Image (cartoon, rainbow over all chains, first blue to last red; front, side, top):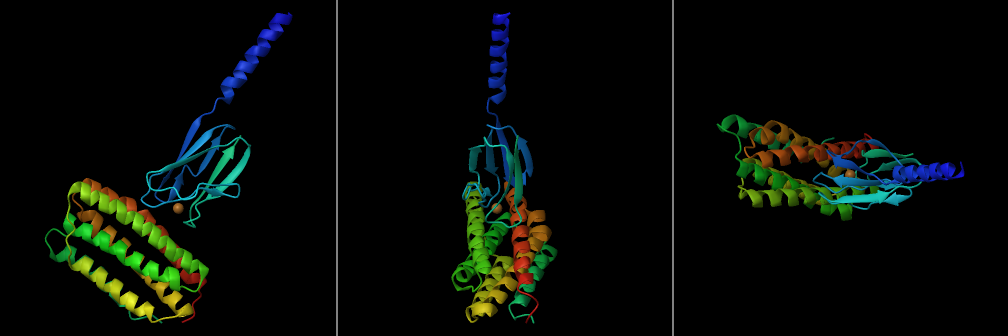
Length: 102
Length: 177
Ligand SMILES: [Cu+2]
């Protein structure tokens, strides 16, 4: 009984570890937009913003800032804290996106 | 009250449209390359002046963005024409873009403060509108090389964003003369 409990405990821990394994998610920046504009990810995921435009862009929030991402360049960050992160491009006033970390 | 440099933009448009009507086959890829490079350079030059001379912080920031973005576009365009071995060839449209740019510079250099900001922004609106028109009516339809055409298609959204940005500045300046 005791070993059974221990086994299931270890199993649960392993499951947790597997679940927590970071995924990489990509947001394209193209046509002066973030694609997708709204993305939901799991805590611990690494998000990559890939600039596919001909002009530089930024990914800017109160708590983080990519600075200028050159054409064909990328910027990434791991998000651990759950919450909504509305971000924008500091250069182009019309560009907005939202990252939701679960 | 429209200033005298605005009609030159329409001259560019007409000449761009005319070149596609009169010439049997519109501009060649070499001519399109020259039009793209000139269009960007003209706006980089105006932006550099406005970056230092504009009165409002928003206009200064916009001017800085024009320098950054059009420089980046010209780098991509330069890399592509180099790769494709397309030698830019000056033509009526690129010449009138250059002339329109020179006239605009001469005009705004004489102005100060709010009058400078207004004239610069008015011209940016007209300029971006004219270039988008040229892209849609002349440049994209006539581009032969697929990669050149793709570059023109790719550059379009940034010109639209610049136009909207300039229009926003224009309306926030109000309707005063
Ligand atoms: Cu941007």
